[in-house]
Image (cartoon, rainbow, N blue to C red):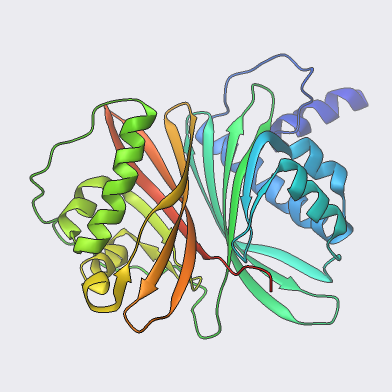
Length: 295
């Protein structure tokens, strides 16, 4: 086989075919996972080496990043930041989890970063990729620093039967329905309405919390059942909602500028990932990052 024949299968496996290539259907779930794991390794190499060209080719035009200090960056700002940031002495991605929803893929990972001065930081990442017809393009990424004392492993619990929920399902397939679902998600937190969450969180739901902890559905439901809003929070509005749709997957980006009963305040920025199945939207993932404005 000539060299071109050897290179072509490799490009298919890594999902890095040029845009000029013929359009092909989205890869199978198994192949997509191989491709995205390979892309994650290439991303680590690109960050270590300061390879901005790699990111220009990977990142989609409508890309949105939520940084580990809670800033929102569009594609241009992300590329500038990537080109300017100092190279890492060491960077590895661990606990990589890939879920595929047709032409859309959701990837969770934990990054272990060693700075040029030897300091080590662990960061939780969530990334969303969309198949362009020839390769995977990155449309969203969010990071949250894992605070000292917070475990790196996914926290799991045995699932228990969901509480009955007597509300009406959203069958509409439009941005207004997604916006209402987002409002209902936040209201359910205020009300500690675990039955609402039981009805709307997918069985494979995962959440990254603002301290970097990582919960499965069962642990999250236990947390949602606590009257956190009633006992600790005076105000928890939702604002700056940005909804993006990719096939049967929707990304909801927004923020909660909260006020605690003791007078402290802060801002959480989040991305929720919703998937439409059998005419219903269910949430498969949530990622929260504390917004820390520059001084």
